[in-house]
Image (cartoon, rainbow, N blue to C red; front, top):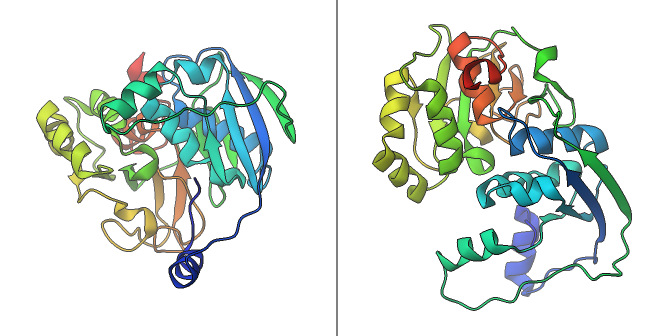
Length: 286
């Protein structure tokens, strides 16, 4: 499957058809285990920074290896969600027991897994070892402008955003809440939390996460995109720095082309709004 824009959608509604080229495949072999305080968001930002925003244009990105197998299904979603940010049409991972269990909890329909052929031909193959990977940040104004968090420590932050389709799942909210629990966000910083769906919101209420966010000083907004698309619920002011778990940080992305958007994991955003500046989440997690 792949996403479509409004023009593609209109063409499909009018004609009942869409036209695609069969993409070549870019295989990413991710070895090792992500260290404590480093998450799927850090991994995908690192990969995008390495291959650049057009490094996999019109390809299918296939992610495999020990690090991928160790991730939860929700964490894998974060990586597949951001495959488009390296130009890919989709982000694929092999079905395993975790995947099958996730699907069975949500659908009774039978499904047939699809696997890569043993003799599959790839346009490109890159191999990584991530056991020493550090938290990553994408700096304004492109997603591939990536660096380790240590390179941007201390940059003042006026707003943090936790949520969106990239990192608004219950697992993400749990990580952020574990950092914010019993603490208050910095007096000069706002925090907006946007659960990805109604299901996530209800589970977060049940687990007490919403109470944790509100007590920390956050504003919890309607499930959905939140301020990511720049239409409501947190459009930044001129000159403000925002750290967000979203998937894009283009100039004007959040509704103001005079603001600056940094991207990071939910843990990095939570740690940063406590400090009022970009912070390393390992300082509060470890």
